[in-house]
Image 1 (cartoon, rainbow, N blue to C red):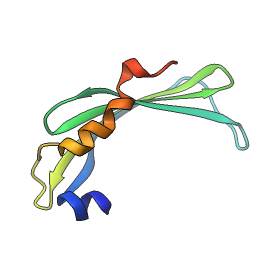
Image 2 (spheres, helix red, strand yellow):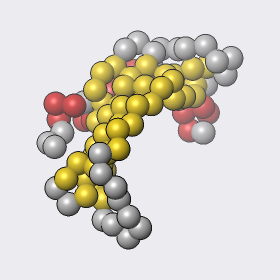
Image 3 (cartoon, one colour):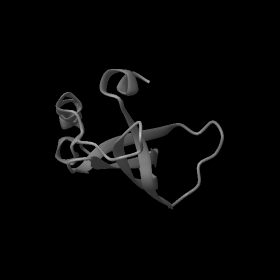
Length: 94
């Protein structure tokens, strides 16, 4: 609700592609890495990699869009774009 209150915007999931490579079980210790693959004017694509020990067990790609209260895409606020920079894909070590 902070994004809604401050910018009058919502972030919605436009699409999600998940590849399950290996199973995880209750009580498994998992490591989740998230990074931003690309950014456009109104949306961004975020990747997530889930590892169990050193093995990748899940890879996901999520397309997120900023919209206004009427459901129309809007430009990503500059302050949010600046806060995304540490999560751009070339700043993560997999």
